[in-house]
Image (tube, rainbow, N blue to C red):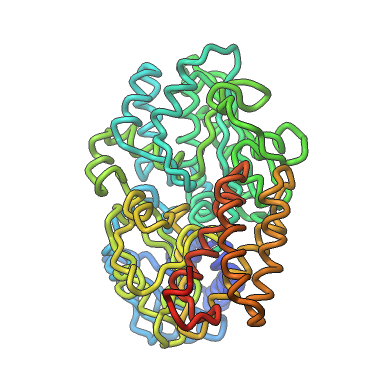
Length: 517
């Protein structure tokens, strides 16, 4: 009887040596005449422990990490295949504090299964939501999603049920489902982890969405920088077709849904939904004017649902366990869970899925373990490169869309990037302007020109020149960007710039806070 060993195929784990470790384990086992079954699972999201090697034992899966090639021989000597003691021994995986304190709904399977094994997926409650949806009317599916309180996890936080209902009630001979998988925000990787670690949950969510609104064609718009996800998604889609979970007759229901992956070309602006549709249609990724809304006139002028990966991957559990089950998690109008990504200068980087309501301080210290450098955490940027920088005085803010709006910040895609007290916030503000200038599609003047001028003004401020003139000028530029930009790229660039200026005026050469305005 062979021993089952799990080594992640996740690209973060691979970048830390997981592929080499997997090969070394197989080689060592063969040398010792030990029969092993090696499964490449998704990552559990404890990146400071990757490569995390797990072994199936009578008591459950036990973990060792971080494992390097030099450790393999010693692990075998210590009988790790039977859960033996070793300096890298972490105990039962499910009992690890970092995991045990989480509320994993969307990420329930990730790290447990072979991502492209349909058998694994079904054995772990996969396609139960779809099976329920096949027996419901489109209106009932939309109602379940509406009742759950699910809002867009891509950043805009628009109620998913309202979007779906609009598409459902817009007559058309053809409708589309688009998954925005162009995950480009700094410090974010939850979309990638889903696509690499549990692609069937995305396939199932998109298929349910198609049934809900009457769409028969879906596209996953994937960023080109995700080759591992591309390969895994295509394999999973092919397996789903062969098993009848995609195609013209889903599970003999007579209902159809087709799905394919399309690659973006590395433009940040194509994460904006209308620019994404332009790209999908083979055009340059320029932002469209709204109205019309994509739900009424989207891809090729047809009604289109556009949701991000986490939004769609949250749908199967809602259709499986009901809208009320999902709505019972969270606070206020922020219902369900959010996969939070801890990155930057943090000791325990990784993925934490929790109900809305946990504070930044709890995330940074209870899960993140404080800064990796051991120095005080000075600022945290939440919501990607266009998110506000939050000072220590705001670390007790709960992760809730409305709570963040009240402090002029955004939750966005749930990325949390920490900086210790050596960071220069004026330089970070300049980066915000420079990022916008580089990534602007160029269609509107405030974004195209304002960000370029903004970077120039920041250079003047950083060099201490004419602060009495340049600080007000910077604020004026931000006001123009905020109110005059066509889309959120220009419209949100003031968030990192002004938050850095308002909370850390000393980094801008302003010693008197009262003069910061």
